[in-house]
Image 1 (spheres, rainbow, N blue to C red):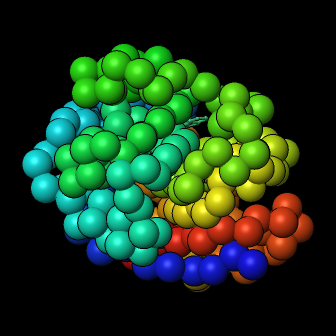
Image 2 (cartoon, rainbow, N blue to C red):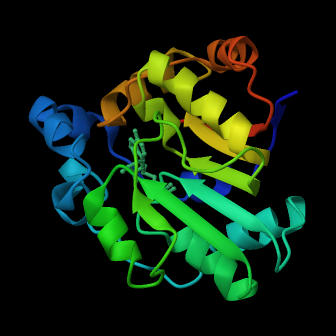
Length: 221
Ligand SMILES: C[S@@+](CC[C@H](N)C(=O)[O-])C[C@H]1O[C@@H](n2cnc3c(N)ncnc32)[C@H](O)[C@@H]1O
């Protein structure tokens, strides 16, 4: 049965966001550019996405430590990051446990190319809604952080089924909302989100799609 955990909320809340400015800044065009997940999204202007996604020493360190502790990761563990971006979280985990086997996939060619600087193998371009090239329970842990709300609901179902199949344990993080204010802020801020669901709706989907791992929601306050 799926379970709520809190591993990323503090980091998410440490970023300041001007919701109205984003909504009023040619947002339709910005959404179209962002949804390509190419250079503009990662390293272009903030209106298209991250506004420069660089490795910041220590940014993911606590999260990596918490994941290692919670999921009892060891040197013989295998971890997959779905929507790994430039691979910084996996890099942080590998810094702590150098022998661990980390894998990453992302729909973004640009991000995967950047990840190759740290990881020669096991990082590849792939759409999370497509069949994963791994056998049943291949991974001790599969992560997908701030990724799966970017899928349409039918593709979300396919992604969840694949995560269930290839993972012993899993942890996914999704954008969501508790009230009208958070829904409004999310709608202002989101450039790439396809599935806007409240917490209860996401949980209803987990049941329906038989998601068996852990989850966390991030909110826009
Ligand atoms: C908000 S970023 C999160 C990146 C990283 N997980 C992190 O937390 O820093 C969303 C990521 O999802 C990826 N993505 C979006 N749609 C995807 C899909 N269908 N399959 C795989 N990755 C996808 C994007 O390229 C991007 O790397």
